[in-house]
Image 1 (cartoon, rainbow, N blue to C red):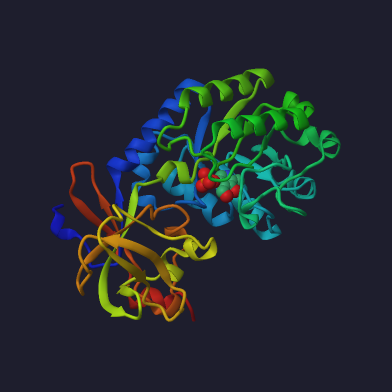
Image 2 (cartoon, helix red, strand yellow; image 1 turned 135 degrees about the vertical axis):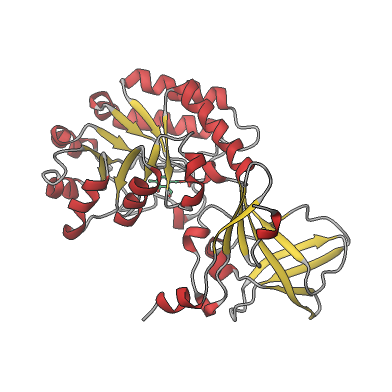
Length: 370
Ligand SMILES: Cc1ncc(COP(=O)(O)O)c(C=O)c1O
């Protein structure tokens, strides 16, 4: 298709060549370390680019029945099912889509081990250390419900499981910190790891980022795998899609209220919710020039602000802006707040052409409620 099939703004634009660059790093890690890589669907589930991703990843991991089903049906490969808590009416269906199920607690394992007798079973461990600087996203926060902490309590249920999932990294681009935390995991859960056949180290490791020491990372993963005789899994979400996607918006109005403001046809509350939750600014490149302008969303929320950025010229109605890094925890969280038009989804193919794969309209808005 030609570039003329670009949709009307707002839309998310996934650039396959940028996605491919991440996938090539994932390939290198798989080859060099022996670890398998599963896409964490909670971060990114836009299945129109799974054709490319499945050539470089072993499968998917999930956090709900819907995600595990999407993983099985749209991605294929190895399909891990995890949920903080399975409901009685979900478990059999979840098992039917997955080849491995990871329970969050011993109680869930004991209740549902029978239902999952035909597939591989595991348990989530919580090592009590994390790299998160946000309490909200810290799996090791006080009173965390995310996984079992006590090796002595897990040892008696080893006959019901063959492996573990440990997710304690969070946007961690510091290899030294990753490695030190893995030392702590080895120390704390050594007896369990010795008895395991596989260990998933979860996501949150920014190994596809600029300058990450991939060779050291692979050597550390390999050493861990050899020490305990386990197949290592990684569950990259953000690392799989980082810097691959923009949110394309258009300026609808400009104001001056002591600061120069530009209102665009999108909303952080509706289309980039994590910015609001973590109180972060959006990224706009190159963010240079003499004109400082606050980019605002069009919802009625007073704090619906993408951030303040620098531009070479004053913005005017009709100007286009690309908000960077709009794939992770973004498209999966979009919502219909204020009824703001839902961004379409478009893909820039490897040959540079742009293909619109989804547009949303009034019917989608109406059918999201009743
Ligand atoms: C269990 C588990 N695996 C994988 C991920 C993906 O993490 P990230 O997108 O930071 O790589 C998460 C994120 O919360 C998670 O909870």
